[in-house]
Length: 127
Image 1 (cartoon, rainbow, N blue to C red):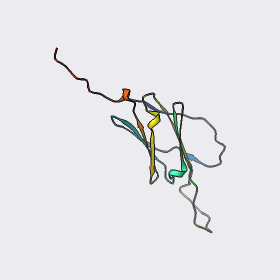
Image 2: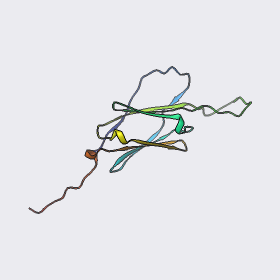
Image 3: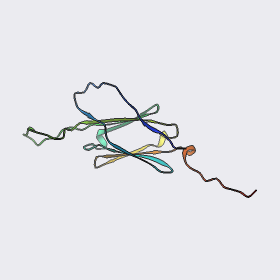
Image 4: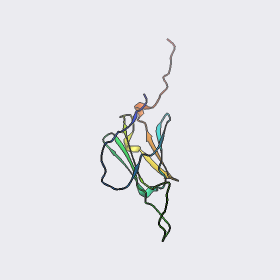
């Protein structure tokens, strides 16, 4: 039994005038957890919000443009922007024990599996 994680497609219009990126993610599965690694350059622990409402896990990161004092950019190849992405979780994820850390612009979400979703060994006995 493998828990499913599906990306939520949103067509919501946002009223903020700032650009929003969809962070790239890697999703790994172990016997006990599902791990989501999201690339979100420029975010720290104080600038990311993670919410779980019903079955939807939402990630939002907020980044401010930083320029040296008394300088105005003449040309930029990368514009700082906010991040937003959502996933639908199956009932096989233990919602009460989800953990998150951020380091060097990478958000690490650990979603533990419920006992029912974890593999178990079945003993075979002689007949």
